[in-house]
Length: 248
Image (cartoon, rainbow, N blue to C red; front, side):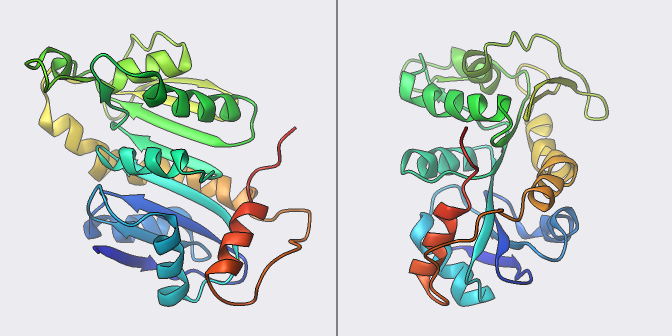
């Protein structure tokens, strides 16, 4: 397990932020993005513990007893961890997917459907989805058995947007509707530095611009939780389900 506690947070309930494939060098910027209240847990690898262990870690390391909102952040292959959590039944209030919405080539429906579902919720304002992509399409021309769908193509299919314009780090093309945002960043067809910049620059910037304010604004549920245990994993799980965005 490579989990680390970036910040314990304050109060009960408190927001819980889970970040995947995000290294410790970003910890100061993550703390700044989410403010002192949020509990922030990060994993430096793409694959690892699922929600039960993540919640238990937050409880054990930070004393989290109740969760008001959950945000999931994935960079590159870390987005597959977010996908796995969603497919296991986890529903967050906010998502940040940084240049990692890959799929097999050709893509399978289950690899698109989960993202289409979140996008639909975000368009209606019931969740926040911020997704980014570069313009690297070389992945689709790799030899048979190794090729995979580019992040841009997956987002085009999932959102229905053309996403054919892109801009530099300082001025990306942004397509938005409701609480759905897609940031399109220019890159070469094969561009490792552009992909790396999605972590070191884009993740903290968009966390501060979108996820931090969203959690602060939507952090308190108007309806009092009915089934919260004062301590332990069951109480956190109950809080997580109660705190999911209201559906209309």
